[in-house]
Image 1 (cartoon, rainbow, N blue to C red):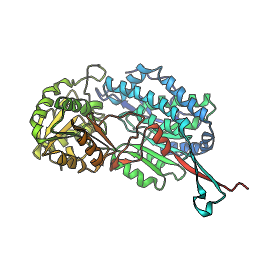
Image 2: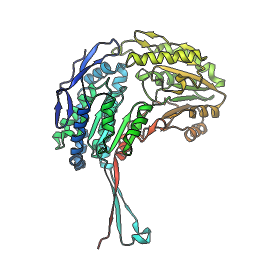
Image 3: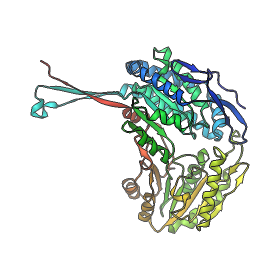
Image 4: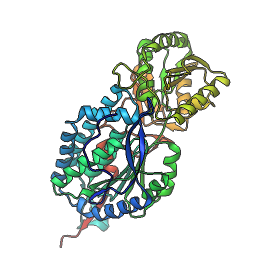
Length: 482
C-alpha cells in the first residue's frame, strides 16, 4: 500500500539483523488491507537481545559526550530527509490522520535534537563533607552515570515518537536500549532502529546501542524481568504498567500510563475558546491519546450555552480516509477497540447519559461522540476510553469542579478555562495531576517539559532532560587527599 523503507529485513538484534523470524500482517485500520508482513520476535530473540545488550553496557557507557551527541544529531538529520515516507508509513500502520501523523513526525525530529542538546548538561557537583566533623579533610563530589541496559516499551498510538522518547534519552545517558514496539505498529520503529544503528557505527559505537524485539506479552515479560537490566520505560495502559512494575521490581520503572483527562469550564470562561479546545483536544489521534479531552466539567451557570456552542461545531470534524488531508476522524486501531467503545457508550446511555452527537459507526469509524450527564460510575467517565468520545457533566461551582477532577484514579493532565488568575493558581495548587494547563487543551505537550502523571497514571518523567536523569544514577566520590 505504501513503499516500504529500504532497510534490512528481520529484527535488529546483536550486531546484525536476525532474518529467520516469523511474520504477521500489519493492517491499515481504515480498510483492513495488509500494509506489510512484519517480523514477530520470540522469547529466544528476547533473550538473545538481552545478552547482546548487557555486553554493550560498558562500551556504550564509555562513549564520549561528543560521540553520543553526534549520534543523536545524525539521527535527526537522517530522519529529516524522509518526511513524506515516514508520514505515509505512520498513516498506514496507525490509521491516524495525515495531520496527526505530520505532527508526530515533527515532534520526533525535535525530540532527537533536544536529546542531543541535553548531553552537555549532564553534570554533578561537589558536596561539603566537612559540614560534619567526620568529614573534615575530605573532598567529595558526585557525577551521573548510566543506569545500564534500558527496556523501552512503546504504545501503538504514536509509535515513532514514543520509541524516540525511549531511545534518544537512553543514548544521551550512555545506555544501550532494547525497544519493544506495539504489535500493531512496528514498521516505523524498525526503520528508526536502522537509522540509529548506522549513525552509531559511524561514530564508533556498537550497533547493539539499540535493538528491537517485537512479539507477544511473554516476550515483553522476558525483557522486563531480566535481573541484569537497569530500567524499564513503558508507555501504555495502567493495568499493564502496574504489572510491569511488579514484574520488574526492584529495577527502576518509568511508567507513562493512561488517564481520562479533564477540562474544566469555569463560569467566567471564554466559552468559544473552551468549545474549540474540546474539538481540538478531544478528537486528535482519533481520540487515542492519554491526554485527549475525555471528561468536561462545566460550571452550571454556563452549561447550556457551552453545550450549544460545542454541538453546533461538532460537524466540523470530518470522518473519512486518514490519507485525505481534510479528514479529522478515522477508525480506531482495530475492531476490538471499536466494539469496546460502542459498549461503553451504550452502558453510559443505559445509565442515564444523553448522546448529543455520534455514537454510531460510519465507514468503520466511530463518529465524534458527545455524551451529557454521564454518571461518574460509568466506564466512559471513570476509565480511559481511548476513542473519539467526550463526556460532559456539570458542577455547581469551581471548587466542586476541581473536586470532580480529583475523583479519579488517574492524574496525568487537566486543564481549566477561566479569566481569573486566582482561579488558575488555585487549580495549579489543588489538581492532583502531573500537569495543569490553563486556557489550552490538556493534551498540550512540549517535548522538552517534564511529562508524566501521579496516582494510577504512572511514575517518573519523560522529556529528554528528565528522562536522562531517570536513566542515570549518582555516583559519589569521597577522597582524603593525603
